Image (cartoon, protein in one colour):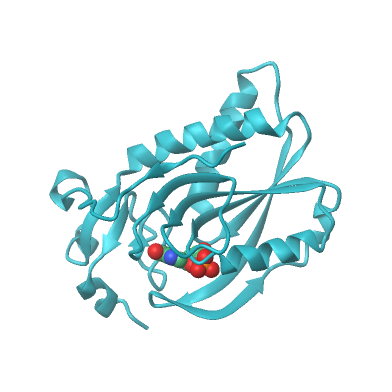
Length: 214
Ligand code: 5GP
């Protein structure tokens, strides 16, 4: 399996907010739409196909990284389920959830907290697919992989909707988009819990960072 993804270049201006439907309560705090919801969906459909093709017939435990990964994980699973319904070959799946916290405002605190890991022993001997919203430095994912691998899974793969260009210490096997090194929100990605209720992936502006800072 080779790493392939859609590259959004550093000089991409994204789309003007007026071209799409954005909640009124966020308009003033966003710079642009970087990835419209429809494009996210279409790319997710293809990732689902790639995963099903690579996974064979063994049962899959999907580990959804909350909270930012919940939309992507739910949509990815819907596409995998559609493939399961409509082909001769299908993968049985179960879903589990984990929460990690590493960010305050738009900065990684460096201190990564892992929450809700008590059920990870059920991963022993299983093929695990970790579904994440975004990999930035990759430290969060490295930490999670260490915890998951301590529970003797048969295999572990990572699917991340976004990877930030530049400084990754870890790159997942499945990537939706490689994005510029800017703080993005929407499609369940938050800034201090705000912007999860936004369909598109957008760039937050300085006013937004100030308004929703903790
Ligand atoms: P890493 O450990 O790879 O530096 O950070 C990964 C985590 O930081 C992600 O799971 C996500 O929670 C958060 N994160 C990193 N970059 C962004 C970003 O641009 N927007 C949002 N909303 N979260 C981010």
